Length: 356
Image (cartoon, rainbow, N blue to C red; front, side, top):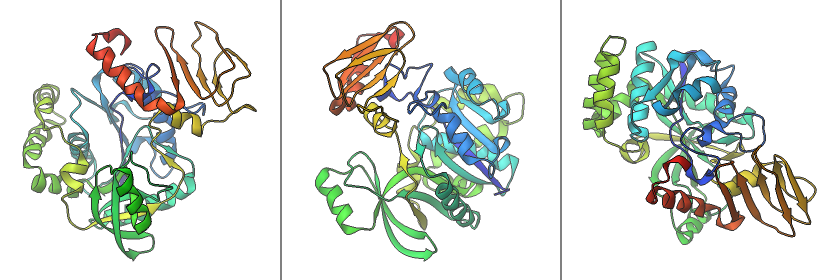
């Protein structure tokens, strides 16, 4: 993988993890499964030694650039790129591709989110090698997660014939389905979850952007000309916020031809909610996940995350999520963990920026 560069997308907040996840402490900078590492740190370490830190590029927001630098000191500061404004994944990946191309005209990009969990690192690395080899030959490759059930929270990829060991053609990308459609996908047996992890040469993805997203490409051209010059910061500030805000899935993956898929089962989770964090964390004898000072009496199946400002006590309850951050307290049933985002939306409506 000597020509391979990891591009880690580390923007966003992760509003379903409020109140722990806020603008200055977003999901990727939290330890959500009591592993002792932030999600971003775990992602960087997962890639080594095949992709060392000096070939890791992190794209994040300018508001948390200092926090990201502190979180992963092994990654060179020059490799941490701060977006002036979030513009979704297509501009993020296109901008990173300019940097990879400048570093290595034949560079292969391994693009992945900063806040996903992979339990089986050996399987992940074996699959990554297959994907990199195919990408180096000019293909666009994605990981497709072998589904464990009819999940409605993920997009799906329809796979076709196997063209090499562990590599299939991708016949199409589909949006998050309803339950009935998801059940049909599972029954068909050739649908996998869209992992959001992609592999391609930098010049390949830039050519696809030029063909399928010409407006974005024009903006990237302006940025490319300034990279490494005294004008870089001012050009980026002017051009980047005006780039079209579009996902790489919609802008490229759903339209490009000859995409390949590597179906994988390496204990993946997008860790999308407190309920998911509970499921993936070590539990005590009463099936509770406890982080911080607390007293738990005759209570089961709860997640408790206490701050250092107060003790949390539970008595005679079950299936609760309790998260205290000193300035805010969340209490909800585990079955309602998706509603945390509604709380965040209400706070925005009320103008409570200090809690976001």
